[in-house]
Length: 301
Image (cartoon, rainbow, N blue to C red; front, side):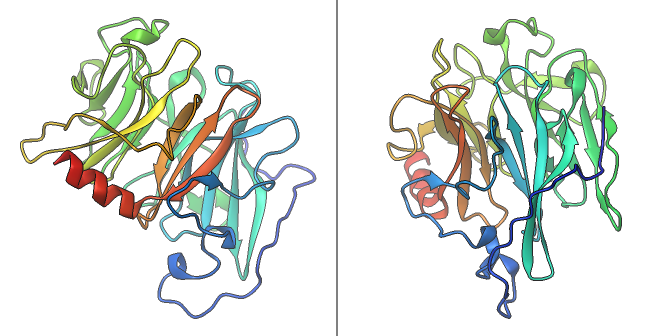
């Protein structure tokens, strides 16, 4: 069932009520819900606001290009989409409003490079697309479907599409065969190719964030049998090869936890990701990223 009507009993959350004259909404006090912004140590994003009772908020999130819409997923478990919901907040007039239901059974939101289309993961592994109109978000339509998995689909400015997938080389049910991969457009099933080493390592390779210009990729890696994982970053060199991935550091990767859903805000300032020790305690975190990014890039290159 695909819907774009509001659900009964929406909770409306209002934050600060005035917006100073700014050249960019990203630099206003209302950006990011007006939340206190983190430094080098990750903190929970919008605590107590995103998740409804019995659900956790997490997986990859997405901000619209102007920063005035925030889209995220909620669920009750990691491997079943029966209770999955896609929700959003919208800055209208002088207030943030939400959380509002966007669509049932969808996840992994990502905007096109021009910000006009929202791609979302739907049923049966297909990627659907929707866009915002004068009357709200339109009913999703299928954009891409393959015989193999298209997990964590992300488009880039070049027209390439990146996915975690079993591709043409492994079984969908064998997560050890999944690789960080690239689709050169939306041609035939054979248009997929693995990104190879050093990005892919033994085990599951599926969850990532890639920069719109393809200059770097953040991967969830070193996943254990109980799903603990860490976030690493790799940079694309002038010869188009990838550097050996390096850890985002002890402040982000501290302790055993499942870490996934990496996403960098359109202004490049903050990294968002989801962390949990089980399906019961997953939470969206955010951390200052632009300064860390510069240090890691110097280290890698």
